[in-house]
Length: 333
Length: 298
Figure (cartoon, each protein chain N blue to C red):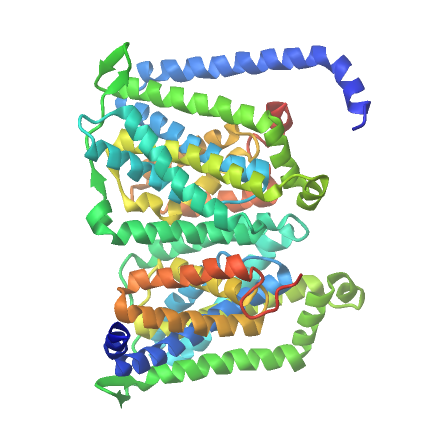
């Protein structure tokens, strides 16, 4: 429309190149650290790190909604849980159990839930959206909890971990190290995809919805369709996290469809910094580490959510951008 | 025709009457919770996620007061007062700094508060369900049931609290302030109304109403730390179905939804009957997104 930003972009191009280089160097350094980590860490912390990555993926998926589209979802447990149950179903029904089939089934389950939620709740904004996502996740919880014949009800489903198969290349049992690498590959791939999505023209429209929805509509974008796409994408990545969690723990349980999972996801986002994608992973790590350390110092019965909840409230009042908030512009460039 | 006749015969009329009474009783309690929620939303623009926790805490404090004093009515008043003070404190510490910020911040903050309160209750009282006995134990006969008078009394009391509150909003000094603030915050401030304190007062009143319903409800179901989430969800549904910030609408919606759930419970098990209210919510969102009992603009 105007040429002014274009003119400005030309002298900046040199600087942008170096920003890119710094970003990729940083990315590779962190990846190298995470790849090497299971070789040094003891079994317990290796498992812990894998789990943090999975929670990080869940948090990142919800960041697409909270941080980029400006809609708080309190219903991510539904997508996560449906991913878990989809994977469980595929692993129990198909023999021999196939890893990739489980992922596909989990994604299909999450996509179903996401379609349902997207269709109904994207008509609403802000608070209404938050409440309806919460209520929808409770619907899924009630269904899963009471439909004992299919979902196993309160006991959930238990299954064996599938083999790690890469066609023509590798076929073997998961060890905790290869599982960590597999999860890391999926999470890193998802991060790069989400980063690409948020920087694409599509992502720009999402961010403009966050900044000013009526104006975005007035400019001529079909806001509802963009919001639905955003919920769907977010749901798919959350489902992927659910599949990974199911594979790591070899069970699917209704507890993970319950509201607490969604609540934790929101906390990860706020702690780490919304709208940064990496922030939520950091937030998940911080939260889980704090929880682990509190449990070690004060015993398992210690209500770790009281101090963490107070930190959370203080963060909202004094540091609403989160731990990585200062780097938000840089990370999204 | 034959199938229809069979269906007609399959409806047990005595059960329907009983469930109607049950529905109205829970509906009035729900209305008491929801009116606090809708009041806080309508005036402060705050969605109080912690409302269910205030309800739960009210029930627990009522239990503690009851155990120490032995009087149910003292428990009711004591719990309401203490939770009102707690609500005021929460508003001053956590919500006042957020005035003027994105409303999403207040959702997150009240969500954090609900986490802290719920885990505090779990830590303090443990997972055991506590029970407050009914203050009056006489019953009357309803078909084959001995129906406790207490439930009828609860309905009347809830109605009285809501009615009294409505009169106060209409004629009381703080009530006029509250309405003025709801209409035009800046103008109210210019007229010398201490808007920040009106907000605190509104939050305290809403909290007290939640606590009162918690104590009133406790003899029927028992007190546990998880009761908050179930009820705040129901209250949210009621508030959305009735129209956000619309007091009369929420009361009507509370009774409507409770009746529907009570009827559904004749054929379904109670945990599935909840889905009925979810369906009502979905239909409302689809066809009348501003609420079932208000005209849709446009």
